[in-house]
Length: 419
Image (cartoon, rainbow, N blue to C red; front, side):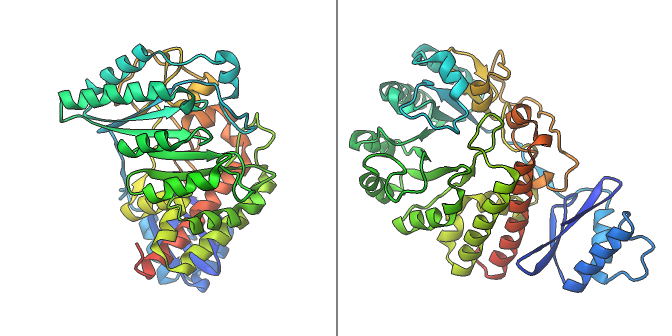
């Protein structure tokens, strides 16, 4: 891994599975390199940090890269998602599990079994619809299904708003551990086309990742994926990451279309991955990605959701202006009626805001000078404030390695015409 600089423009040269690449952050361009050019670039950079100026021999590949990196104008474009706002509603901080990696622990201790008042929910939805035509209501917790009766009331209120003004579009999302899912709830989720994220407590055991009736629930949910956008989200902790590959393929064989593998990184969590754990976890991801690409199956590629977002940004040359939309197009409503830039701000009580404005300026990010920034965005604003990213080498290593893997996978997918 070699990173170089020249008046703020950078080239990142790297190797993945015997293939060689150069990524130019200032233009969001990805190039395949011959081995000789890669070695020449690497050796030249070690000799001279100014893009090998004065180096005796410069290949055509490297000369083109140097010219591109020195270009005065960037060719990427930023995304300004202002047409759609997502409101994350904490219905309650209570939960029927006590996962050691959960970032909502401190809020749970503070609020106990308190729940969101419907009047606050209705008022916030109305305020957003007065500003925007499109919004998503994201039911969160704690375990939101403990307040399923309120979910039904809120959805009914939203449906009435859409009937009053057909220009308004409202989508529904929920993050749940799945323990309370039953036929009535699943039918409701399907009726209103919910995006359902199942956050799992255990990714080691074949049929206990979602709850007591896991096998039956999967059989209930999987056939409905045309109307329920189902994502299985296993949180990988330091005692579970070694089975990541088996877990991914197990769910693919069951017919799950989207699997989002999320490693635990939080300074307060003993189960979080260390830097050494992150390296071993990365080997699991490498195996999955290698097998996904080798399969030549579009559905397998799309199912591995850690790749899909990077593919979008590389293909369209769209920089991640920040890792998430906190305070820009994502907001959170806590059980006490307070507004926050996102759910993590609410759980950590980092910074409440007085009102929801749907197009505020971007938050500053502490790692804009990193080569990976255009595809990483510096992680989320709250994550930076919470763990101080400069001290979290495991996360940075994992993110950069994942970007390199995504670049390699993107080149293979494009070569095979699978994207």
